[in-house]
Length: 298
Image 1 (cartoon, rainbow, N blue to C red):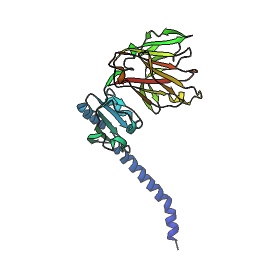
Image 2: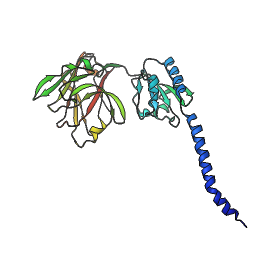
Image 3: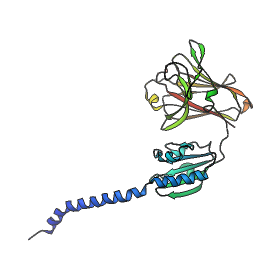
Image 4: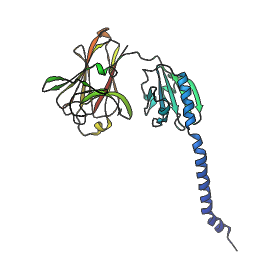
């Protein structure tokens, strides 16, 4: 006489294999249907291009889902890890493209500060557009105007100009890293459009601008690359900002990676034009990969 329990036990491995097989088949059949295909990106591109306006910016969530750049990479795109904490004050609208599992937005996107104007599902993509508060008015962007700067290094206390402007940078010596130029580098967890200003072994580095208009504030962001911040140097970089030959403020950048904002009131200095100088110094500049940007805001 047989035992039903034993027979069921013997059939368990077969049932387990069958169940896993059905799950796997369902996963491979259904899961791809949830994710965007080429036609989804093409449709999203048409919507964005048709309604794009000056002052717009595009972000994608998650940040690594950069395929949208293949279709809209000629437009202003910010590829940042945490869009909720990003500074969008230079823009009037932000477009958000999201993938499944990444559609929860918090912060100012959720509390009404940023007003949702458009929401559209396009296959595996979700496309949103938010209207932002009135954007800041930038009167002068030091990175954009870098080609007009007077760049000087100091050797034994004597000024020496950097006179070769080649491919977005002022070359200051035969050493590959001793230049001042426009770069895109990771500061913290995100790529940033900044000015490379590695401090020099010979002495301070100065970057001067003439004919700078006045405004309400002068803003800078500073930072070290992640590799520089991890290097056991414990040697801070100092950025000194001067207007008209007088020190406006200074930043002492510690061994910490990030994109740090500093701002000074310059409304009392008048309409200008002004001369603005950024001075970078460090007593032991080995591996101090320092970058900054700056702007005058109305």
